[in-house]
Every structure is written in structure tokens, then in C-alpha cells.
Length: 188
Image (cartoon, helix red, strand yellow):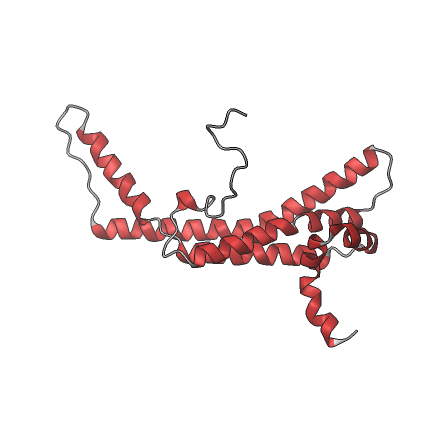
């Protein structure tokens, strides 16, 4: 094994995804699911880190605080509205930011491999159902290779997030949008 092979190995799953007709079959037969799975999880972690560093829940917390004050005052009864101090608002922002960052990290580090494992198990059961003789390593390899496009999307999301000054939680899922083929007003 040469130095070039060692350096190219982490990028192999992306190359396999670019030319699937030639490379997926040999990879599945060889049951090489380690690098694709690691690449998918690492890319998801990079996206979670990028989103976490740019996360800004301040407008959401301030809107919630203003909404609570407005609903207590609009009942018609002169009820004193509980208004938070700046320190309480800052503490709430820090707490919500921490919770959101932990959720992003757990989603990337735990939920992503669980999804790949669940897809591999579904491929295994479907293969057995239709009369094939798949093995779990081969099914897991197919599932990990099928998840590589999601890893690419995670990298694009990370790049877009790093170029934003801040990201609010409402727009985290819509940072990377794909254009619609047929517009909303089209008669088709």
C-alpha cells in the first residue's frame, strides 16, 4: 500500500458516489462499510459544528418574551405583565443555545449512524424477503454508500453556515435549498 492510497482512502466513498455503476458493486462485495460510515458521520459533525457556531436564538427568545407580555396585557383585565430583565433574557438565550448545540451534536454523532444502521437493516430484510442471501456487512456497506450524498449536503450546509453572520433555528433546515423543477403557478 502506497502513501497515495492511504491519503486517497478517506475520499474513496465520494468517488464511489460519483461513479456508482463501476464502484458500488465491488465495494459492497468487499463489505467495506467503515470509511463511508465514518465519512458520513464526520461530515454531519462538521455541519453541526458550523451551525452551532453561528446559531443565534436571541430573536426567538425576545419574541417569546414579547409574546408573553402581550398576551397577559390583552386579556382586558389590568394584569401586570411579567417582564424579564436583561440578565434573565441573556441567561435564557445562553440556555437555549446550549440545548440547541447539544441537540445538533447528538443528531450528528448518534442519530446519523443509527439511520445508516436502520437503512442497512431494512436492506438486509428486504433482500431476505425477496429471496436473496444478503449479509449484514454488505447491506451496511450499501446503506453507508447510499448516505454519501447526505454527507455532501452536510458539507455544503457547513460551507453556507460559515458564510452567514448568524443562523436562526427557523432557517437551519432551509440553508441549502434545491430549486424546484416546476414552479408553483405552472399549470402542470
